[in-house]
Amino acid sequence: MGLLDFMNLTEDIAIDLGTANTLIIHNDKVVVNEPSIVAMETKTGKFIEVGVKAQQMHGKAHKGIETTRPLKDGVIADFDAAESMIREFIKKIPALKSRIFSPALRMVICIPSGITEVEKRAVRDSAEHSGAKEVYLIHEPMAAAIGIGIDVQEPKGNMVIDIGGGTTEIAVISLGGIVCDKSVKVAGDIFTSDIKFYMRTHHNLVVGDRSAEEIKIQCGAATQELENPPEDWPVQGRDLTTGKPKQVIVSYKEIAQALDSSICSIEDAIMQALAMTPPELAADIYNTGIYLAGGGSMLRGLEKRISAKTDLAVFIAEDPLKAVVRGTGIALKNVDHYTFLMR
Image (cartoon, rainbow, N blue to C red):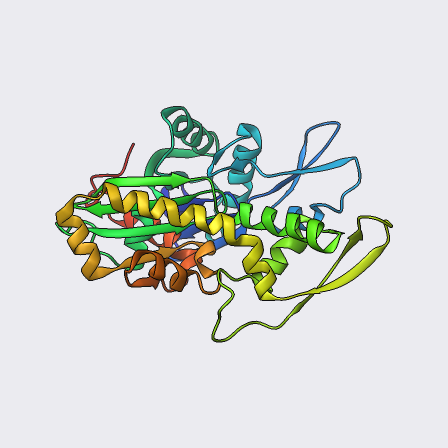
């Protein structure tokens, strides 16, 4: 390795800045995959941990430590926290740790399709303050489509649904652009809140965000009719009446009941997006089906429920949690090819 390798050369990184998780690709590899959460000292406002370590403190810290999620509904809610989080995640990239000089960074960051100009500016500013010299933005459904393997430049309609932590992004893509889209603030975080509410109202049990998330992963379902149902799951929390810790057992059917209203909202948004689709592209979607990406698409039985609602074939992307960042990385390698990238 020569001296020039340690000089201030440009490094390319792709970032999926998500409400629940942040993923970073460098040199075609996912090098960071951590929760989008920051822990700080309450009195001084000093940031002490980000990612996994900050999540371990969430709900368990004393009054001197506060945990916060810098993104809400897919956009930056806390500018300073977001900037610090991005900077710390970049420091965790293995190949950059050995550099003597801090490299100039070229970033491609994915954003929700329904984002405003002010929110775009916040994302761009956070990236620039974290060391980026060039910043490109790409809409999440477009990144997901590229990550799935769809040729987005073709004159052919494809519907992609990205169910993330804060938002569900629905888009019909053709000729390298989004023809029509629908964004709803119903996704993984709402699912978690639904489970917390269900546990409180049906089992008189108070559970935290982490416990509700675990329930969603272990026995979450979109329908009460599964071919291979998960086992019942033990849940510990605080009894609402007595204040004592207790445990109850929940089944996937209960969780499907808890999530039913939110999933109906996503189904309604999908039907609205289909109603907005030009007829020629609707014909393409009839033949190609609907593609699901994002962590929320891993909810058991969701693809079958959407298929029953739309009368269309529904496919889940391979490794759906990484589909968006995969597509962002491909766009980064071919910046000149993808003219829809925003500077």
